Amino acid sequence: MYSLLSRNLKRNISVLHKLRISSTFIMDDRKYNSNCTRLQGKVAIITASTEGIGYAIAKRLGEEGASIVISSRREKNVSNALASLKEYGFPVLGLTCHVSKEEDRKKLVKECSESAWDKIFEVNLKNALQITQEVVPHMQKRKGGSIVYVSSIAGFHPFQLLGAYSVSKTALLGLTKTLSQEVAADNIRVNCVAPGIIKTKFAEPLYSSKEVLEKALEPVLLGRLGMPDDISGVVAFLCSDDARYVTGENIVAAGGMPSRL
Image (tube, rainbow, N blue to C red; front, side, top):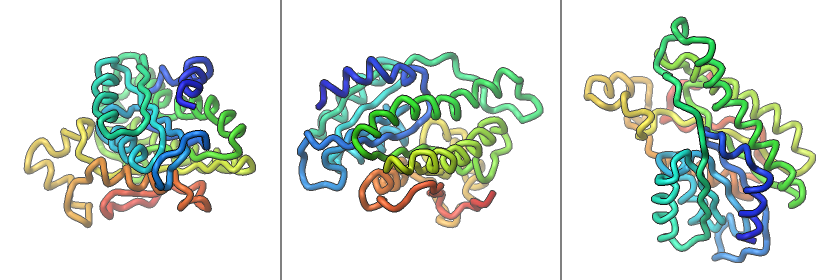
């Protein structure tokens, strides 16, 4: 099972090497027999998964019985994450993703160039669709699967300095709704998680000083930053059979931040 998955990824999922988005794909593979956990016998492909939310998701799904495939744009990051995850004893494979130079995501909407908008939408939306198109045929052969995208609370409540990013995350919510209808007949579920302000490198400017943090937490009912593990549990639920009747949903995990479009 494990080596077969590796060959299939290298041959058929070449688009994975273009990704920087975080998404999770679960496929049935009953050849693997782990402990009695709810993701037993499943393979999880997690993009952008060597740190932060992606890493926490990989760890959680592995702990619940899944065989894990992680990815990152830097080989060193993959190696470090791979070594760390292997210590937990579950099957894990690492792939290096090659991505282009990161665009500046801190410009106001009116200052964001057309090329920057194009790049952000390519990474956050188009690449999500492309990797899905590559993975779905494998899920169809296995008579089912679960796809979980990671959007953002910014998709519901745009952040001032992240205009293009916020719009792209809103579009990802729509992609979730659309794809869930297209693949439901194949017993494939498509859902999305929208994290709030999570303590990761990406969100560091929001908690780098006491004043900024206090301002950022004003709309958070729980009054604290989220942690990557707060998101991984939601993803694990959506990937499991406990969510077998859940599809087309956008679940907000943001400590009570406003989340209406």
